[in-house]
Length: 175
Image 1: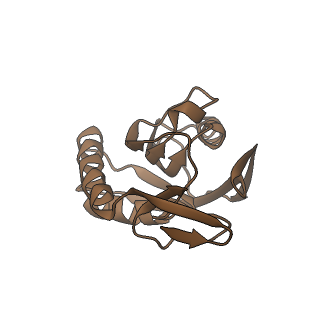
Image 2: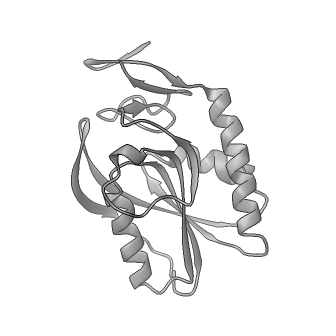
């Protein structure tokens, strides 16, 4: 168990399970993007560890960029997406692979997909370390999923609670 601020979290997904699944995801992505060089768009802050481990496990050439969006306050999503740090690369006619730490309501994903489609991308796929199907309100689902999890609040491996817990090697769920 770990305590972060006023909350206690219990182990949920081990570092070994995460590592193994990321290797498998890399294989799936390698197969899909064979003979292509996608622009990988990592959604900060939560996906930075996932992004680093995933692209190092992939065998295809990629270009990497980062964007930052936010829709969480404390333990709940606000339902509104605020773009904080935008994209600088030209995405017109490009294959995009968006990397998310977690897809729950789908609001952020819908916002990103709409924004990128408006910019004339060739294709857009989404890889998410975690997916909460029971929390999803919007129709777009990730194309590549590390783990489907119940609708519980999680921290670790890049995910945070009030800015804390991102450094944990495992994923923990709220006790």
